[in-house]
Amino acid sequence: MSAATDKNSEPSVQLTDAQWREKLTPEEYAVLREAGTERPFVGEYTDTTSEGVYECRACGAELFRSTEKFESHCGWPSFFDPADSDAVILHEDTSLGMRRVEVICKSCHSHLGHVFEGEGYPTPTDQRYCINSISLVHKPAQ
Image (cartoon, rainbow, N blue to C red; front, side, top):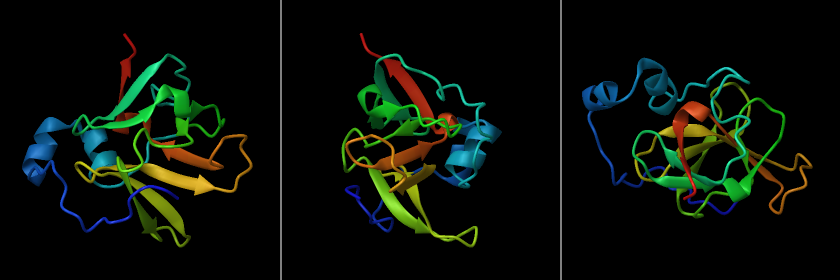
């Protein structure tokens, strides 16, 4: 996997817990700051196909582009590569008794989702960045 893996690096966007709670809705806070997961097939970007970029809802950093988005039928927006390989941090997650790889925004260390590989999707990377819609803001191409 090509993304940065140093979760111990300092985020460039740092807010107190109280500031994050003020900035984000309770649902956004639960996913972005507490590593929650939105229910499948309910996110606003699950089926979005319009051109543009996807930014971190917490800090506005560009994370993914529509050219790397694909339909995986998993219930969450799926991308095969970040917009910039250094835009996200990959971190081993064993929280549910299994090994997964968590995807975190490098700029603010907010939880975005998980990345899986080797699932056989016909993408250039054989990776599926399974990202919570609530973690993203889509900015349409102009």
